Image 1 (spheres, one colour):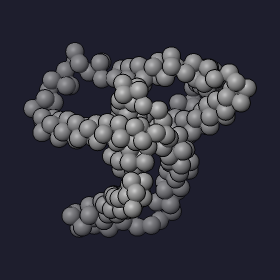
Image 2 (image 1 turned 30 degrees about the horizontal axis):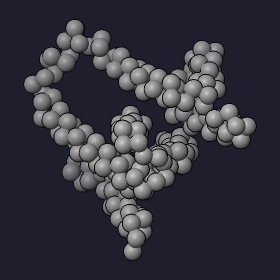
Image 3 (image 1 turned 45 degrees about the vertical axis):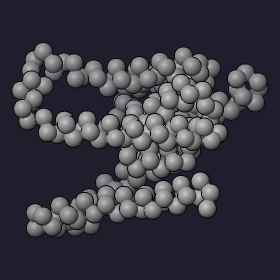
Image 4 (image 1 turned 90 degrees about the vertical axis):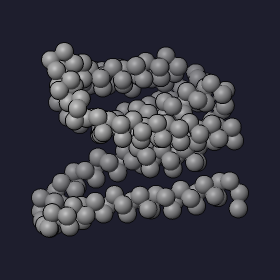
Length: 217
């Protein structure tokens, strides 16, 4: 059995185990609190609304990120989560430092190692945060720090976005300008971010393909 067959075998088994564990959480909660839930109309309506958003984005994320992360990195990244804000930037930065090309064996190794280390560090940081959250709550809720937390997400994604736009300006310009115009003209779309990400990602892929065919990139 070669490397890719081993990665797919281990990845599928790991994904199946994690899927069972995640789906078992509601049943475990009901068992602990001695209660039950009912599959009524409200349940199916909420489930349908979530599936409409997450199924297309989940499929698109696999298609988009798999070439960047490699086989092992893709499985590990989707199991551990936080791809766009942690795993993907970490893997891309490690790949750039190692000067590895997507689709090569070097990229497979570098990406898997980078995502593995990122996952371990993230888990340790979260564990430390859980332990320290109670004693640090008064400090974190102080009037001095509270305004800063409101800007963390825009600062994080703004910095990441600048890196990608600077590196691939021709690919980024079309979806970026379209997103700016849409959100300025229709501010209500901010409540549909997950759907807009999928739409703009498809537009970016199509525009990038057109530019590639025309020899622009």
